[in-house]
Length: 402
Image (cartoon, rainbow, N blue to C red; front, side):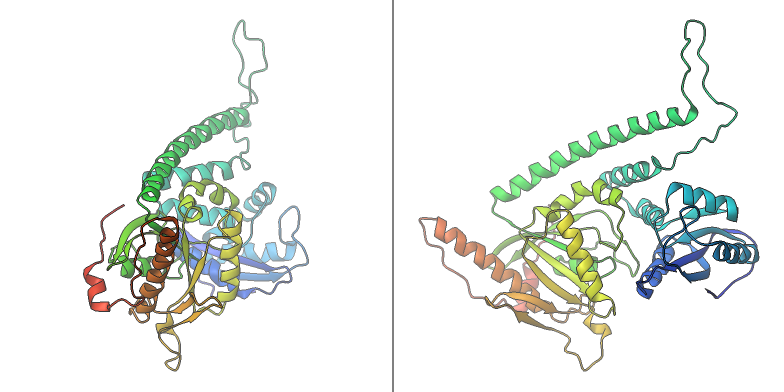
């Protein structure tokens, strides 16, 4: 089924989106693909939907659906067809041949967005590594007239195919990138050890992409990290110090957002960046409370946290974007768990409503660490009251870079 077909001449950024339902009935995933396409600066001219019991091994979709897409492409002159699924190399090649255009799967689209968003040296290295590892399974021999590179006199070996040459060069580049990332990882470990020696509490902001993590981070530490209403607006981890009055200093990190079906190559490539999450003392799990799919997003984030080994770190669930809810809903409040700790906060990072509860929760965590230090120290440390005056708090915010 196609919608909103737009006709016109071929434009490089025009795209047809394809979503096939294999029985899960997840409409939110296709809407997410629209957002991914928008983030990749693609202009969607048509959306094609269909149902199947299982993917076709050769072309992923059946002949009828393939013909439907071909006709829409002829009508719209779309430059690319984007599938909301992961395609095998043979499926991608067969579709490209049948439709006479570029075929992009969900993984490739996410990689392209990451390539556009990466700003830091480390971020660019990580994206390039993920792209090369994805490409390694999709190399095809493009030089059919060069069956083998012939050896000269004294070189009687068969030589190597162009494909073998490409694979060898790619493997060499991948090895170099991994060595550079390993060096950057060692630098991060030195910085983390320095913070541990200074007994600074480490907090990482995690959550589904576009849940408002960077907006929360900016308001929390008065920073100016780029934030926008699109998927993967920021990739590079940003770390700042936050000083609470009469409490101490917290190191807060804004990390890359998660998404369902996040490519494994990206998870592996960004493991160095995600180390900030793994080594944190507390996670602020930001959720878009206005999203109808928030429960699925929470589960997906928790699944990815488990994959990287961060599932045992204490969490505070931040139900963000309360300003988008019905006015009858409270703009800011919190809930405590059975141990009396704040574990759930409703707030708006955009308006600031409910932020007092977040500062209070961070102060309580600092107090808990203070009590632990008191138990291990011969000198008693006096505990501070749990509340923080909002007027004083803003004065003591420190935005210097870590």
